[in-house]
Every structure is written in C-alpha cells, then in structure tokens.
Image (tube, rainbow, N blue to C red; front, side, top):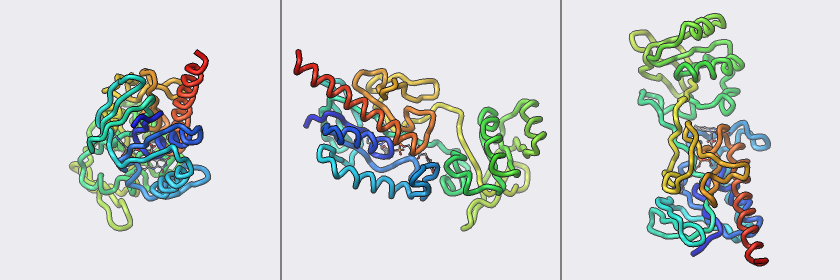
Amino acid sequence: MTYDAIIVGGSHAGLSAAMALGRLRRKALVLDYSLPRNRFSSHAHNLVGLDGIDPNQWRAQARRDLTRYPTVEFESDRLTAIQPAEGGFQGTSKSGATFRTRKVVLAYGIQDVLPEIPGFAELWGTGVYHCPYCHGFEVQNQILAVMGDEALLKHMVPMLLGLSSRVVALSNGLSLTPETRNSFQQVSVEFHRESVEQLNYDDQGLQSINLAGAGPIPVNALFYGRMAPLTLASDIHEQLGCKQDDMGRLLINPLGETSVAGVFAAGDIASMQQSVAGAVASGQMAGSGAVHQLLQEDFQKKID
Ligand SMILES: Cc1cc2nc3c(=O)[nH]c(=O)nc-3n(C[C@H](O)[C@H](O)[C@H](O)COP(=O)(O)OP(=O)(O)OC[C@H]3O[C@@H](n4cnc5c(N)ncnc54)[C@H](O)[C@@H]3O)c2cc1C
C-alpha cells in the first residue's frame, strides 16, 4: 500500500497533521500505539476554547472529526523501521506490516525521564508537574516547590512567585552559586540543597517532601524539569538522519520540514513550546507542508 504521507504518532500533533492532509484529500496513514505524554493527567489546560478538557476526550473527538475525511486511515501499531525507497520511504511496523509513502510526518512526542524517588512517578501529573502554564493556576497560593539544577531553578522560581508567595527551591544535592542563593533569599524563597528522598502523599495529593538528614517539609505541588537533552519516543529520526539541536529537538524549517527532504516533524519533538496548543499548531503546519510538496510535485509532473 502506498500513501501520500505516513504520520508517526496520533496524538495532538499527529491528528492535526492528519486533518490538513485529509482536507486536501491526500491519502494518509496515522500510526499510533496510544502512549501520549499527558496520559497521566485528566485535564489539559492552557488550551483556549477547550480549557480543562480531558486529553483523552480531546483525542477521541479529534478521531471522530477525522472520520469525515475518507483518505485518512488509522492503525494501532508502532513504526519500528524506515528507510528511503523509490519515490519516498518504506516503513515497517512492530506487527510486521510494511508501508510505502511519499512523505513522512514525525509526531511521536517525548518521554519524560523521572528521578527514582518514591512518590514521584505515582504523583506525576497529579501533584508533580512539568509546567506552570498547564497546572500552576490550579495550585495557586499553595506551597509550591520546584526541583532541578540551577538553570531550571532560575527559570522557574520567578514563574512560581507569580502563583504563590510560598515557594521552595530544591536542588536535590546540586550546589548553587552564591548569587542565585542570595537572590532567592531576597525574595523569601526557601532553598534546600539536600537530596530529595521521598514524596509523601495521601488521597488529597502531595503533602510533604523528605529531605536527606532533615525532617519533612510541607509542599502541596512540586514542579520538575530537566535542563537536559530530550528523550524522543522513537529513533525513527535517527534512522532517517534528521538533524537535531543541542536539546535533541528536530530542526525544522518554517513549513515543518526536517533536514531530510520529504520528512516533516511536529509537536514536542520539534518545538520549544511543549503544549497541546503548540502541538496542534505545529502539526497543522507539518501536515500542510507535506500537502504543499505533494501537490507541487504532482502539478510539476503534469506540466513536464
Ligand atoms: C503529566 C503531563 C501533563 C500535561 N498537561 C498539559 C496541559 O495541561 N496542557 C498542555 O498544553 N500541555 C500539557 N502537557 C504537555 C503535552 O502533553 C504535550 O505537549 C503534548 O502531548 C505533545 O503532543 P505530541 O502530539 O507532540 O506528542 P504526544 O501527545 O506525546 O503523542 C505522541 C504519540 O506518538 C505515539 N508514538 C510514539 N512513537 C511511535 C511510533 N514509533 N509509532 C507509532 N506511534 C508512536 C505515542 O504512543 C503517542 O500516542 C502535559 C504533559 C505531561 C507530561
């Protein structure tokens, strides 16, 4: 089976790309195995028009919307290999199916690498958060902590002070420069260098955090991030040879095309703004970029 485009990942970015392809009647296949990044959360915020929607409900509605477009197909499968082939690319999935396609849209998201601290994974998305825009408003005026290295703390502390006057900075064993420590002191932000040993929670959520050699400190919400290269959910971009920036994001041009001709990328793997709205917008761009190339090529063939 030859497609105009295969979309690898069928969440916010991939489904948005599928709509652009479907509306211009291009034959597209969405491959997805349903492990989106926000599966731990029951509400997606910072999404104007649908603020607070359950992300699974968003995906279900997007899939329903796409049933209007008969050229868009879906497979619950994982793309495991891809290589250039005549006229485009050939991919193979985990189930052993093979696909030929003229264009590829990569929309497989990233994987959050969480520290192995008891309580951390259990509270991910419900008491431990990655982003103040997504979850900060709901925990405003509570005791908010942020854990990370110096760069992350300097980035997040001012944001959290916009939400609460009670902010705690945790470096989990890392040292901070005297300037940074001083600046936190000046704005009454409590700083702890000790290792974070455990998050204590009950059915109301996060209650306190145990630090090495110290008693538990009260905390109601913890924000966490890594100023480190991202872990992309697949190695398909490596198989294709797509260039990445120093944070691991795929480099794309304004039409969403990667450094490999005919390969487009969208969503968290290709954007600094990791959000549902950002993924939808970049997915639309990547889908439109693929459509543009397909139809230009077809037009050119007709006039040659
Ligand atoms: C806990 C949590 C809560 C969040 N809450 C919010 C929020 O409230 N508001 C907000 O704007 N953002 C939120 N985000 C960020 C948001 O989840 C991401 O920005 C968004 O999911 C990115 O969409 P995406 O389509 O790029 O990737 P994803 O949503 O991660 O989807 C990628 C899809 O690709 C599939 N896939 C991966 N590899 C393959 C492969 N080889 N073959 C086929 N399929 C594949 C996966 O199974 C997955 O379904 C949250 C993130 C987290 C971690």
